[in-house]
Amino acid sequence: MSIRSDKVAEEIKHKLNTAMSQDLSELNLGLVTISKVIMSPDLKLAKVYVTFLGNSLPPEKCIDKLELRKKHIRYILGRSIRLKYTPDLKFYYDDTMEYADRIQRLLNDINEGSNDESNDGSKVQ
Image (tube, rainbow, N blue to C red; front, side):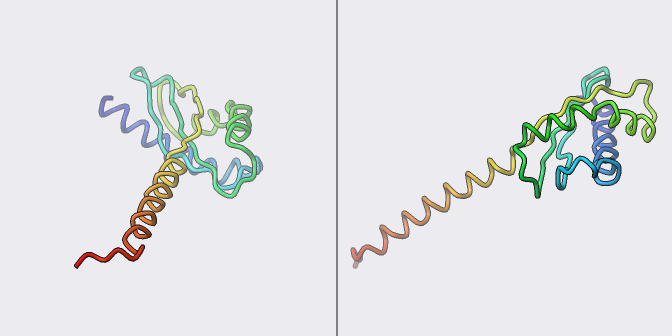
């Protein structure tokens, strides 16, 4: 990616995080965080990766709610950022935290298993 698209992606991420916390709280999605934005080379498409905290709905339903409000979100974004074209938004669920949690649990299980083996009474002298 170019430097310009990186800067635009970072600015869009910041503006969308603000919009999610202030203007879109009525969606009842809990805490919505924009974790990453990837811009197309022509700056007309933004892939927006989101996470949801404090929410009982499955992530797919939350993404559907965001997709239904996409027009309003683009309007808010267009008001707050000056670009030739307001990019089209495509929302994706970012499961990085769940993946990292699963890896951590696996590592903990492995570590507990090796501790159990070393404590089984076979002492090395």
